[in-house]
Every structure is written in C-alpha cells, then in structure tokens.
Length: 175
Image (cartoon, rainbow, N blue to C red):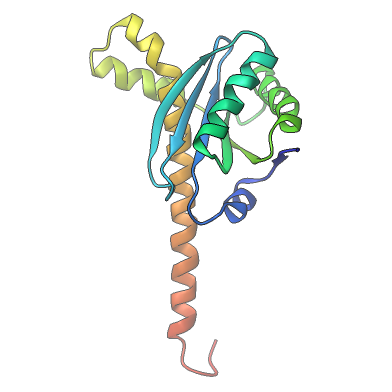
C-alpha cells in the first residue's frame, strides 16, 4: 500500500468516473477536511481534525478516507505570493511524503494562496463570531481549495469535449 503524488491532470485521469475526492487544508493546529460529491462538482466542508502527533493525525485521516471511499486527495500547498515555496509549503510536502506509505490513493497539490483570507472575509461578512470563525475557517478553507480543483476538473472535461465536438464537425478529409 503506497499512495502516489500526481500532477493535477494525471490525478484527474486516474480517478474513476464517479468517486469522491477530499481536500485538505493543513494547518499547524488542525487539518481542515472537505469532500466532493461523487460527480466531483461540489465541495462541502466535512470535518476538522485537531493535530496531535503525525501518527494520530494520519489515523484520523485514513478513517475519513475509508468511511467515505475516497479516490483521491487534493492538498492545499501554501505558496508564497511570488509563487515560491517557503517553510509552510515544505512542511506540507514533508507531511505528504510521510502520508504516502500509509494510504493507497493518489495525491495532488493545489495552490492555496489566499484561501484562508477569502474564507475569513466571507465569515466576517456573515458576522460570524471570532470563536465560530476559529472553528470553521480551516474546514471551509479545505472546501475552498477543493472547489477550486473541482472547477478546474470541470473546465478540463469541457475543453476535451469541445475539442472532440470540433473534430466531429470537420468534413471528411479536412483537418
């Protein structure tokens, strides 16, 4: 049993037609988890895992993966604003390297720049209390990350279908 890291397009191709994926927002104190529907159109916040030690964090995560029959994982990669990788991105990559031997599904990274900022702004606009924001922000950030990935998957699928439709519309012998 060993998971693999795939780039985003490879992950999309490797997924079965109808299967859920989860999105993760790795924080220092919590792991926000979101899940997609089987058609991979909508991301929903699922659970917040309080981080204890790596082994316990992975046990909680693999329990969610098993219960929900997850086919892939999208993990938010906290890049710097200039696109470079700092200590948080390196910590995320290290977490994934240690996670892979313990799971049997593929993982892909997703640029999560400003996801927490966007979610926090939404919660502030909804007049959510500071305590409640603290409880919600990481799993909502996971949903925000996952929804971005799902939207990209839908666009790739539409673009492929549009290209096929164009080919089908070509008269015989012309390209």
